[in-house]
Image (cartoon, one colour):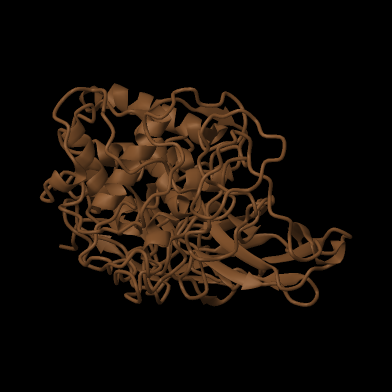
Length: 556
């Protein structure tokens, strides 16, 4: 877990939940042996215990650590190099996840060749942190179907990390949680986040973004990861624990000896990081790593903490109860009649997002957990300032999201509704925020505006905008000195404004009305040409007012 903690987690891995949280994938899969492997890249070989703890290249000596239970492994490093070519054993990595690791290696090889980052190191960390994005439960863009969240860091068994992202990444506006397949703390992601799939976003729940960010994090400073000492320091900067280092090292060695690609969604799935239910379709399958061996006629599932010697996936333990009835099985989600989502900047959306959960018979399904997440370049938030909320469907199978509040950013964004922890397609809603508008604008005074040639206009120009008779605050206004005629254009003589550098300008943009709907224009200056001129002000929404300006010599 990449972190910048000010306090350490509490020790006691074999008796507390700490170990299972930071290494959920490990506790499920019981990785290969915990011996530091030879790095193959030369350099001094060091044990985890001898690595100095003052490394500060990535996190400023991140003190985060988690103790791990003893590893149980039937396939210790060096035991065999004949890994299976096909199948869903531990050496298989889901296709999109494997592609993300290799793409990150290529990207960093171009930008920081001296680091010599091996993709197998990313695979090892990804295995320990999230079980390769929970067995490759990602969509076509590499984004997990549901957020992968660590525990709430509220000081109860874990470090106390107060919220740093207003819940934008982890949905918690009180405390932080590690996020995504590479388990970044939100404050760390804010510094190291990357756009690995070139979609214009930095999403910790996207395996391409997270893998590239982890690569940059590990390569921080002048590290050369082909040197064992530098690789150890990089891993310890991710999680300051010798047990964690040994675990990652053993998976690193395991993957260097061979691996293969498996389809997305078919990888070994660990228990969830947040203690929730396992979304794996085969929860009885033992995820222990397997060593090559001849097939047995009647393979049995391996014992907890042990490992099967059969390269085929172990047979799932028969369920103790009957499978759920079709009326109790979640089959999908659908829009429950949500209308067009539009709002003016700063206003609440009148329409609320509503989704329905369906069972296998097409009927409504109650008590389904649904997570609504705002995505895109927007400052819109749900009521309470949250970007993600989780609710449960009622007896009619529907659930309605909280009121959506538009921010000041205009344009479109999306809201995704997913069945929490399930690999089902999301229901996607498009929302639009339009600029504030005014349908009327008028000058607040009626005093004639005059100035002598080459002088300032003594009286300021103030206008007030309204929309349907109400004050129109925050409305964009453009002010232009215009010519006479049927098709006015910007005048190149007569009154003018000055920009910040004192240059003459006759058009001002980026003006906005205040909270009371009024706008006070900057000073206006007269040139040496006497005459009567026009100043036009136009609002977002098309309201217009034309104000007369006179330049004349003072009376004798």
